[in-house]
Image 1 (cartoon, rainbow, N blue to C red):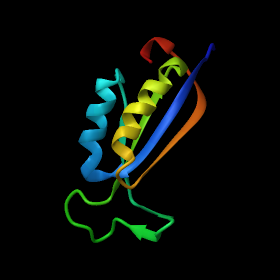
Image 2 (image 1 turned 90 degrees about the vertical axis):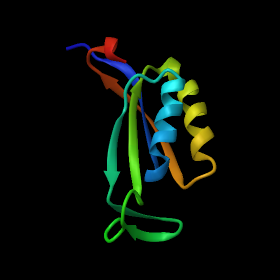
Image 3 (image 1 turned 135 degrees about the vertical axis):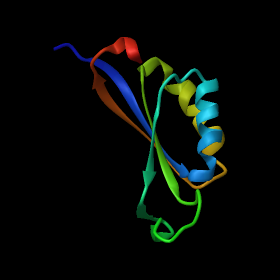
Image 4 (image 1 turned 45 degrees about the horizontal axis):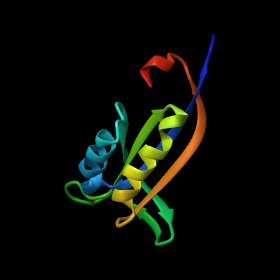
Length: 102
């Protein structure tokens, strides 16, 4: 089966910033993404967990699979939102089936 090169971009950001981030991604031409709840983790500020938090507090992971030539535009849009908030952006190489979907 033939695969096609792509980029996987994962953005961990505070849940209240989810809409601002996804709006920025759409403005940058990103046509698809997946949003997952983040249950907890550990970082510079130490261990944290979503347990016991009320409402939309906590973190979410926004995952995008895109063509490599669209990466810079996506990163510029994402960083404009993430730079002033808690968040992590990672980029990895991946391969996808059905390249026409990306």
